[in-house]
Amino acid sequence: MLTAGVLACAAIAVVAAPAAPAGAAWGLDAARFLPAPTRAMLVLLALGTPMLLLAPVGRRLRLPAPAATAVFVACFTVLAWCFRVGHVFLGDGIPITSTLPDTAALHPREPLSSWLLHRAWSALGPYFADPGRARELVVQDVVAVVSVAAGALYAAAAAGIARELARSFPGETPGDDRATVALATVTLAAPGAALVFFGYVEHYAWPAACSALFVWTALRALAGKGPLFAPLACLALAFALHFSSLVLLPMAVVTTVASFTVRERRGAALRDVALVLAAVATAAVALRLGADYDLAHHVRELAKSNRADLAYLSSRAHVRDFTNEHALLGPLGLFLALPLLVPFALEGRVRASLRAFVGTGVVTLGAATWFTPDMPLGYARDWDVFAAVGVTLAALALAMLFALVRADRARHGLLAAACAVTLLHTLPWVAVNHSIGASAARFATLPLGLGRTESTLAWWHMQRGDHASARMWIERSLRANPGNIRAVDLYGRIALLEGQPAIAVRAYRAGIALRPERPEYRLQLAFALHAAGREPEALAVLDTLERTHPDEPALWLQRAMGRHALGDEAGARTSLERALALNPALAATARSVLPSLMEGR
Image (cartoon, rainbow, N blue to C red; front, side):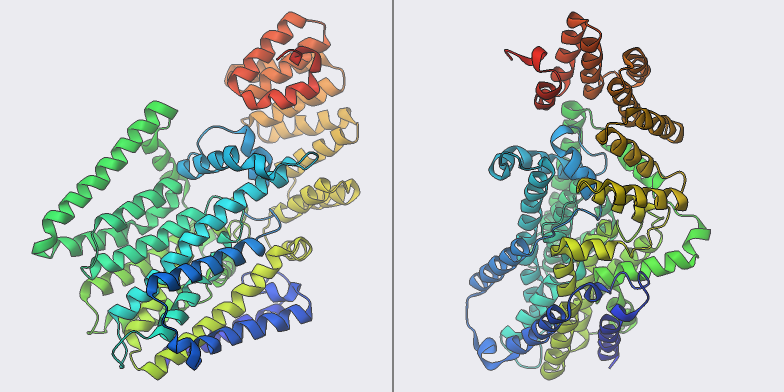
């Protein structure tokens, strides 16, 4: 009854949220931005899918498990690609599409993810590039391939988790219940967190996929069917992809302790722990020697930065955003797992190690998301940071349902309801994100605060050449937050695009006053001065920047432009050679701004 009540509340919330005031239910209100016919079609699809899976034909389907998984993975992958995200409003989509080809350094908190995107750009960029096509669109397609590929792995993990739960918690009728597995697979594959697999431009798809693999392999290890090495390796890989995956460490500790409590498995468990620790240490040394990347330092920096003050944690804004965050990630993750936590802990038919694994996961993941401070882009834009948490909580909540409900009819009914509620929630999000217009309308309602919503919309209008609308949103952003550096930067960019370098100079001097430690604003100021014909002043700005960032490639390219404008061809060539040595990818830009110096190269 408790599970049914939670599902009913979730269904009511999903249906009622679009009628809430704009921005109040930002984790649930996707349907409000869709036309009525689209909403009706998605409702039919969400309700019809579990009915088809429960129909006699679906229940008698006898594809071998590997073949069924392959079919499901193929369907999920095709859907994810065909209905991929059409915008870059959320997360770091804007900076990734703007800078990916030009940045070679590893991201301090997601080294393997940034390396992966660079390799994908090198391999796939030429296939998506067309003459006259904006580089940002090419980057978006390349990153979409990486995201959808992670989705294929995630779909396979979802099918594996569903089968493992069905085996660990058999129903009343002996044998392989295909309907149960199918319903669980679709429910696991479709929480809101799975949106990161729909061509989403960010770094979080692969960590989320590895988190699902971690849960699957950990369940097998706890049941004595798989080695401890698998979940530990998945955790190490997820951590290398993004440091936030450390939140899975307590669950890994429970899995490891459980393996050591079985005498016959101690030797293998010790070997597996040693292998993974050795691999992590080797990777850390290789990164330090090969890329000057200090893993321990960056982990310490993460620990220092991820703190929230008590005033913020008790604020209404935090409660609103935390609730909406988990509603978007779920809706049946934390909100289903928390009410079932005590009954599950008291369920004597479940192994103690499995109860500890699931309980530790729910408490750890819930606490970690609660104590996360206000993020730089705001919760509603940075929701994807918790994608791995969302898919993990969805799996843990479903494990509780399997453990507590053993009667076939009740289990089928609850799984069908969970599947329908999940699809009712997630399908509108897929449709909204696929449409640029609907995404922009939805983004305009987000309560990001600090002028962040307004500055992002200003960027969007600027990208489309609508400078008047962009300036309107910039003014709104600065009224909300005079210190919004992004709005100041956009003001300067628009001035340069409109041939008003003097206005840009004033904007970037203000930007430097706000963020004196950021080199990009000094670079922009130098460029604005160059555009205004004030070369000595531009070179003086570059001299200041060189003292702190001597290996900044753009600095040397701009110095080459300044020297060339002053007639110092030798100095210009020397500076140009330094810029291209630091970043050969600047050659294309150099050909457009310094064609005479690039002749013969």
